[in-house]
Length: 158
Picture (cartoon, rainbow, N blue to C red):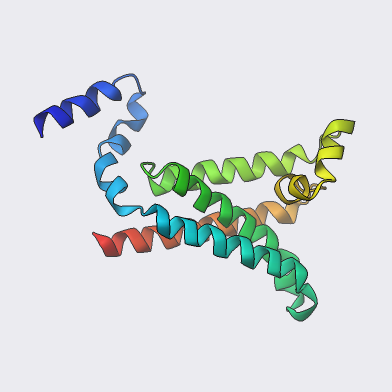
């Protein structure tokens, strides 16, 4: 066990002091985050998001208008948790929110190649088309839901 502690301290000695307390929980978080669960969460969120667009006519107006964007931000949380299982919930939520806001503000920038990419189905789903302030609120709600769900789920496993 002493060798493992030394290996972690050597491996992360190059990181800033800001992350040192977060990295001390590395082995514990790795055991708690299950990639299979995150794969199910990813798939179900994608299906719910696509269904919210396809069946928008059957949903209440508020849900139809904002569910897709909220679920998109939630998907970014699940994707980061899946790809980086050793990150803390706070880091996953913070980076997910930064990515969502960056992609939304990138919609203010238009070039022919970027507009062409946004006109494809994958580009439209990932990059969107036009900047809306309401999307920033949806992203905040989606990330907050992901953060809250993860904190509750991880707390019950402790």
